[in-house]
Each structure stands twice: as C-alpha cells, then as structure tokens.
Image (cartoon, rainbow, N blue to C red; front, side, top):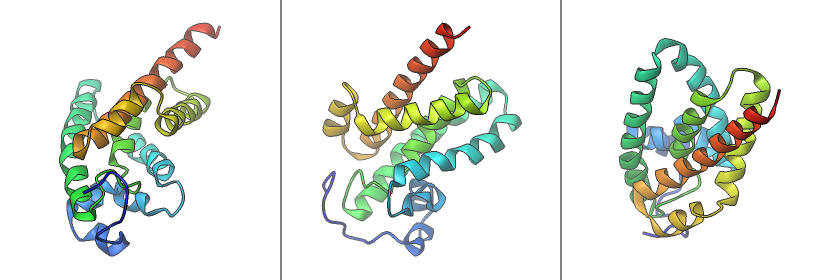
Length: 167
C-alpha cells in the first residue's frame, strides 16, 4: 500500500455504498468529486455542522468530534487499505472532522465562516511545517486524520489573530 499511486479499486458511488467505512471515508459521496475532492469534503461539512451544532451542548459536540476522529482513524485506514492507497484524495472524512472543529470555534457570521473555509483549505493544501512532515511520515488512518487536525489548528490560530486585531 502506498500513500500515492495506483488504486487497486476504482472508487465509485457503488464502492462508497458497499461499506459504512467507505461511506464515511468518502464524506457521504463528496469525496467522489473529480476535481478538488478535499474542497468538496470541506464544503460538505457546513450542512453537517449546521444540523448538529444546535442539537448538542458544547461538551457533547466536542465529545462527538473526539469520537469522529477516533472512528476516522479506523475508517480512513480501512478504506485506504481496500483502495491500495493510504491517503487517497477522495478520502475526506479527515477534512470533515477537522473543519467541524474549526467551525465550532469560528465566530458567528458568514464572513467568518468563509474566512475559516479559506484558511483551512489553504493550510490543508500548502501543508506548512510540521503538517508536511506528518503528512509524509505518518501513514494509515492516524496519518490521514492528524495532518488535517494540524491544518485546523493553523486556521484557528489565524482566526484568533484576525479576531483580536479587528475592532
């Protein structure tokens, strides 16, 4: 199994529906986008967040995120093994969980949500240190999930800085 390379199975909607782990890993199908699946996975986070956030207390939401991360380590690792590529671009559960964390701490307002989205995608794509190190050296489900958690941390740090410098 490689981090990039030739797939042993071609992902399709049928593949995504063939196992609950694939359904989650592919972000309920959002990871099947031909171009920029990570961006589509991140966009899919908005309706998930908007649905869940009002239903859960802050403590319950954070506990749900911890559980989603732990489950993500397994489902992303499992799907990666089936595909033969451990960090296939269509596996977007990592973006969904990490961006839900970002949204949880994002101030209200569409402009803050837009800034959060842009910052998260920027750090997830550019992978500044130490994100690039972990993306290259940690493999399997934990590696898939962890680098996006770091991207979320960078995005949250930038949001906090912007929030503190604005009147």
